[in-house]
Length: 481
Image 1: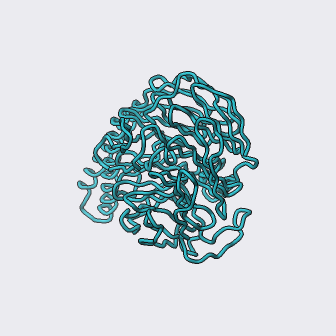
Image 2 (image 1 turned 45 degrees about the vertical axis):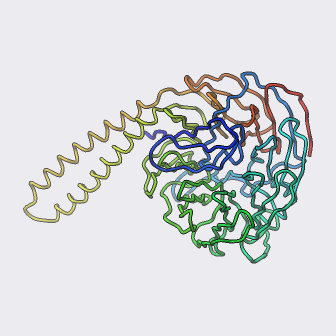
Image 3 (image 1 turned 120 degrees about the vertical axis):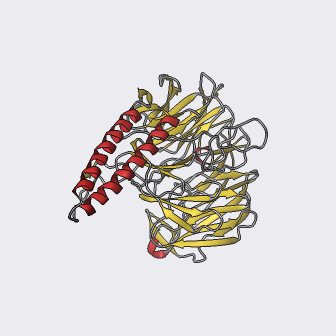
C-alpha cells in the first residue's frame, strides 16, 4: 500500500511587507516579499504551497466573471492513452501547466497571461474590468510573477518581459537565447527556445528557462531583475524545462515536463542532480522535501534535500500542509495525515530497507564462498528480523491517516484559512480541515484548474478561458474580453 506525504506550513503575519517563513528545520524556503492579502505568483509563493492564512467569507457570492473570446490553447493536449512497453494504461496527463489562465493577484489587481491571444491582462479585483493589456509575440502559458511594482513573465516568443504593474509599460524585454529563430510548434509559430517556465525573482535576480528540445539546448538563465541583462547561463542537453520553477534559499528546482525535476544551484544555475520519480509538472517544496508528480498513474514522489532517491511514494495529485497535518488530494478523495509521525516512520522504513539491501548483497557474496554457512545463517536471520520491522513500520504508517472524505473534484486544491478548496468539472467546493466534511459548493463554467485567494476573494480559472471572482458581496457582472 502507498501512503501520502507532507509539507511544512508557510505562515503569513500582519504587516505591509513580509515573508512567509518556514516553521521547521531543514530546507529553508524562500518566497517573495508580499502583502499578506496578495497571491503574487502561482500557488501563492515560490514553494508553490497553495496556502493562504486569509479566511474567505462563510458565504461566497459571485462578484464578477471574465470570459475570453477563445479558450486556452494548451501546448500539450493530453497524455498518451497507454504505455505498452511498461503495461501502464489510463495514463494521467503530466503536462497540465497551461490548461487555464492562472492568476497572480497584488495591490487590488489580477494579472494573467493568455495562450489564446498572446496577451497579458491586468484587471481590477473588485469589478473585473480591464485596466491594461500587453501583447507578446507568442502564447503566454504560465502565470506572471509580481515583485514590488513590476510584473515578470515569459512567453513562447522566447522572451522574458518585465512590465510596470500600474501601467503595463515595458521596463525591459530580454530574449533568453540570442537567436530569434522561429519554428512551427503546437499549432503556432514560436521561438525555437520558448519560455515554458515561470519567472522567479529573488535578491535582484530573475530566474527563468528557455527551450524544450534538449538537442537544441535548454537554457537556464539568471537575469538582472532591474535591467534584464544576463548574469549567467547554463545549458542542459538531456532534459526539457516546462512548468513552474521553485526555489529554496540555495536551490532552484526546474520541472522537466514528463521527466523528473532538475535541482540546480541558485547562485549560478549549475546542475546538482536529477531526482528519481515518475515525472510531471506538479511540484511543491515542503520542509526538507521536494514533492512532485503526478507520474503516469496519479502518483506523488517525495525526495529529501540533497538526495536523489525517494523517501516515499503515494497515490494522489496534490498536497496541502499545515503545522500538524498534510492533506492529500486524489481523483476520488481527500485525506488527512499526521505529518510528523508519518515522516518519522517513512525515514525509519527507508533506513531498514537500506540495511536489508546491504545484507542481501552480502549474503549473495557469502553464498559463493565455502565455509561461510554460519555467516549465511546469521544473515538470513537478520533479513527475517528486518522484514518483520519493515512490515510493522508500514502498518504504523497506515494508521497515520486521520480521516478520509469523498471528493470527486480532482483538478486543483488550495487552503484558505481553515477551508480546503477543491476544483473540478463545472464546480468548486470547500471542505472542513478537521473532519473533511463539505461545507459549501459553487458552480463554475468549465474545469477549474486554477484557484487563488487574495483580499477576501476567491479567483477560479477554468479551461474555457473563464475567470470567476467570488466574495462576500456580488454584483454578478459578466465581462467578455
